[in-house]
Amino acid sequence: MDLAGLLLAAERAVDSGADILRHGRAHIGALIGKGDRDFATSVDLQIESAIRALLADADRRIPFLGEEGGGERAARASWVLDPIDGTINFSRDSPLCTISLSLVVEGQPVLGVVDAPFDHVHLTEIDHSVVQNPLQPGHLTPYRDATVPIVDGLYLRDPSGTVASR
Image (cartoon, rainbow, N blue to C red; front, side, top):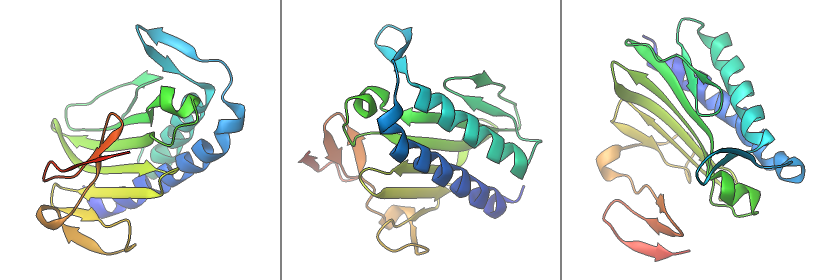
């Protein structure tokens, strides 16, 4: 499996989704109820559709599982997407939302791309070993040395556990 090529495809797909997310605020439409306190918007559906198509163009052998449209999860490898992690935040004009894509191989995530376009944060992880530093495009940092903000409610928590109020 060519992880570098798949990472490039994932990056391009998420970049396309981020463009839809940035421009979609003006066209959210009604919230679509999915269950208790779980919603989607037409923008979620557009992002998922675009990313699904771009990844299929890159390698049709890898199945796709999206939060909104479902799909299939294979034992060997599958793409897994949450088109807008934080849909309610997005619909309320909060920047606290991301596009989260992962390639899962034999039950383990081997690469991931998370983009928070309103906060200008873009993180990439491949094979649990490196994270792309969003402040230095193209610079790879060993994961153990990286500072990766994790959204935790309305707070940012870094890997040391330090919390900064938002």
